[in-house]
Image (cartoon, rainbow, N blue to C red; front, side, top):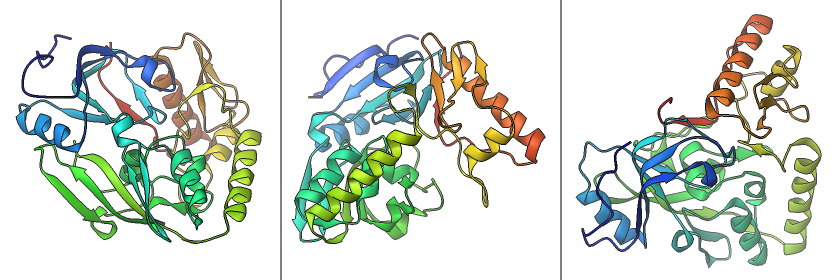
Length: 301
């Protein structure tokens, strides 16, 4: 892809990189380059950048890249990555935290523990950042983002800054009505007062359960498919005989069937095609059509 010529001037203080490889930034370690990667200095910098950007240029926010397949042809337009300036967590009062859009679930839950705020331990188990949790209504262990979110601050594609209450986000299972191209720059979470030792014990329980059941030390993308109503995706995949199924170096995890793995040299096309194989086999075996939970972005090579 040609570059967008954004790397100089424009009064932008963040870092702009044309034709930036994305594979190192995503958990699958596959896929092409971003036509442009922008890492803003702060919210004002992001707002100014988007306001000055041609409205026809698409924008994609990128968190930890844990729930993402970047296709091999790369991502046209601008990928926005929120770095350290957006990874802070502050305590507002005895039950409330304000978290940057780039803060990880582990940082949020650990900060809540230190402040004696319970109820957000489940975020420790979701591989991603606050921005992704808010957009996707991320959840685990019986809780979802909507259960603890008070409000979020976003920067729209136009550069306009808005604060939205949880009620304005149209939350359903793994879905929100946040506008396309909007970047979540912070979120306010509310829990309840709790003994830090109790919080730590719950975090330890979650960590041990994940370690026992999920391929955490692999090149993977987290939960691949949404759980259909009344079903567990992994059980449908297992029943369809897909445990260990391979396409090239892409494999359905033998440890947890709802995880796809890159065993080494899998392309994003291999991984996505394997997912489509799983969808077809589950449909044939059970009549249920699985829906992708992992976001797939960019162009095929």
